Amino acid sequence: MRQCLVILAKTPIFSDVKTRLKSKIGKKNTLIFYKFCRNCVRDLKSKHDYDMKIAIAEKDAVSNNYWNGFDTFFAKGKNL
Image (cartoon, rainbow, N blue to C red; front, side):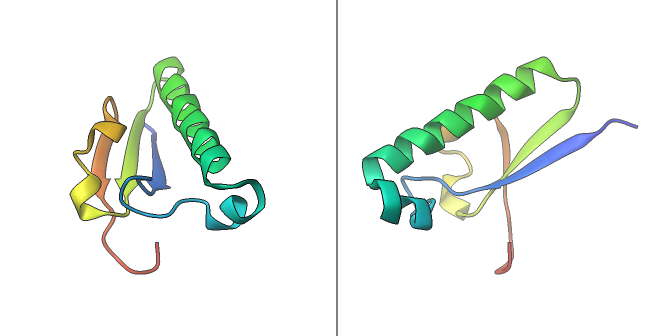
């Protein structure tokens, strides 16, 4: 059986991300951190032999360029 890693994510263009962190270090630095994390996930994906899915919080962002190279789907529900 193949393993799968699912990551729940928001898209900065569509939603506020890391709001508590933003209150401490500001919006610009928070976006830098968020992009760094996304790039780490991309790097992780290329080094391991398992499926990786990104569950996107915003329906309209599933096919956004921000997630190029990732297998995305809309994460339905209120409590994700």
